[in-house]
Image 1 (cartoon, rainbow over the protein chains, first blue to last red):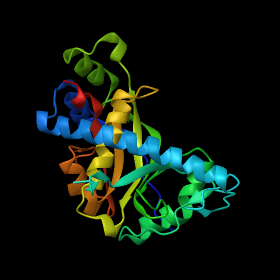
Image 2: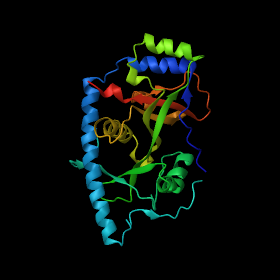
Image 3: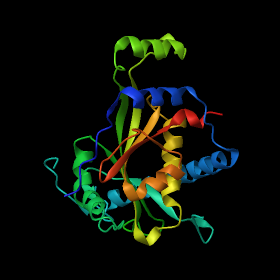
Image 4: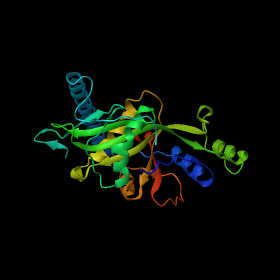
Length: 78
Length: 185
């Protein structure tokens, strides 16, 4: 079974101090990284819109279920 | 980079709580197990939302998978409250910012199929999530958090994530975060 995801801990002592200090500093992206990120964002936004439009069409054509995926029944969280 | 004959390489879908991917192998047994067998339950009980990057022509072919959940980053008082307040005053925190916790989104799981490695799909998806919660957010969110597998730590470092604890000796993962204020010009 998959390992549980660790919860984000409460920070204290030196970790909290370091964290708060970093929050006060500015660490802006480089122009190249910013351009790449925004390009990827636009690409993914379109990919999501198209992906969901097609998914809804497959669901409509197959009685509410998308046959590209496996149907699962879940009654509890493991 | 992510182009296929001039067209997009993938599409993204949000899975419903009765759906799981048919086939996926990111090379990690543990992560595969979560994605194939457990992720739908997290979606059903509203613990996480699952997204899949799928082939542009065949949506049953999954290239990457991601689960997101809301989270928070919280700080306890320092050794004593006086010390903590003195620090905050000294750093000039405005009154409205005197919070002990900040809203965040957790990358619960992020996996890329072995067939799609070295195509920067992970970085592309991280860029998407960063921008989504900075530009198109429906609720306040300051940080992205992740409990990164040790072999994925270089990937998150490359994507400007920071270590949350100076001394983290967990044998499997490292807690990391990204400050979305870093996206401000």
